[in-house]
Length: 197
View 1 (tube, rainbow, N blue to C red):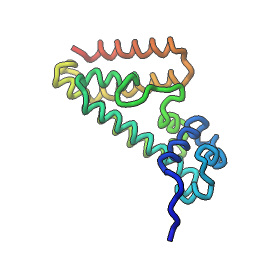
View 2 (cartoon, rainbow, N blue to C red):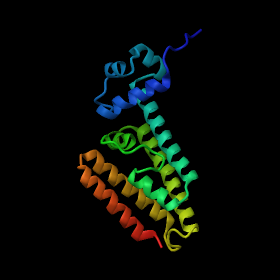
View 3 (cartoon, one colour):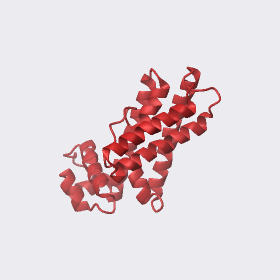
View 4 (cartoon, rainbow, N blue to C red):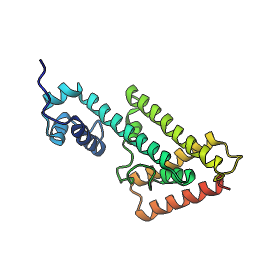
């Protein structure tokens, strides 16, 4: 009979994610993960199979949390349009404020999706999930008269994701707080002028 594990898997996944997020998949060794999690390598292999297995668990958990946050914000919305804008600028939208490390999924996808099918597949699934949230928000915004009836909802949802990724890139690239704030303000003004009544 297998012995019960003496560690909390969620805590290990969270600690491993922070290390992967800081140094990237290639820059993180199993010894780094042992140090970050406080769990012996044999136990990590036993629980997650491999460094890649642990990495994918961290990425799945991150993506699940992001979608859950966006979905919860969409369900509680008083103004679908303002909820969508807040998600684009990382001001609210059910997610924590964007840190200088940027988005864990975006960083992983940029460096790994061309050579790692599992990462690419997860990125595509998460993109589809985020797109569905934005489409839902924009449809509700149109129904409530917050945006114009002639707006192509599918195209607008894609444009908002692109704007969100641009803001994330600026944050991660080391842009000053002033540039970052200006980008968020300009993006909000431009999207509002493009789609609202």
